[in-house]
Length: 307
Image 1 (cartoon, rainbow, N blue to C red):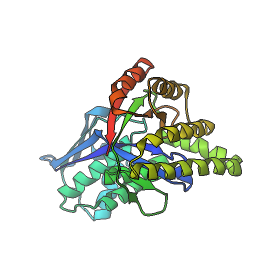
Image 2 (image 1 turned 180 degrees about the vertical axis):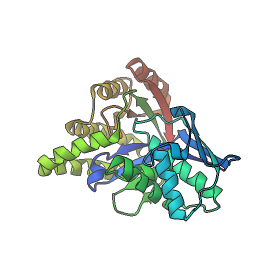
Image 3 (image 1 turned 60 degrees about the vertical axis):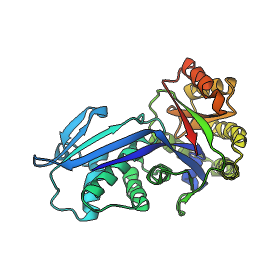
């Protein structure tokens, strides 16, 4: 049984979303995690994940390993006992720890493939809720946005603790994604922002309010078919993220390169301190901006169309 899940980018609202402000995220189907589950002739659950050089039996890895967490928790929630003999193959083209939702995508694809193999298919909502619980194990206080946009595979307007709202894109637009190549675990930047906020809640709540307002304005612009407005909003959001200390020299360099190459706006996407940045571009300039990002040090560039 096969299942796939896309990557994702946050357009607006990262970090502030942890504190109850809205955020926007969209799937990136150019990269994806893929899982194939089949009955095994051998006893046990055998996991093959060549991208991370893993080939092992489930019991040979710690129970809190991300893959083991999914399998154990899913089987428990579905009442599967004893565990069946399985071969599981996992591949992914999503860069790890880069803000593209690699962990959530693997968890979502694995959850779907296992549930389907067991003839217990899950709804998008169930997959999202389950993956969120897995994310909590590994990210402490995840916003919930990664599991949502990846499970639904649609643009999402997200406020923590409120029902997920998917929305329609009035006019498609093009985003260029530049990967710094710097590994940036979300947990660390989220923890640092929390420490800042704890020390001066009035100041940082004001910044979170501004970011939330930008996200709301951006959502209306996308739905109304006015994506050109997103450029200036990206630049505003980036300045606020720099205030929050979650940008980095590598991210700033790529953001500047994109703007100089003609992007309408650019910002980091995700936890920051590395990982990816995004730039809004006119379709005809996508290759030009992509080349400029590569020349400025981007290790990988993805052009995606949001529609």
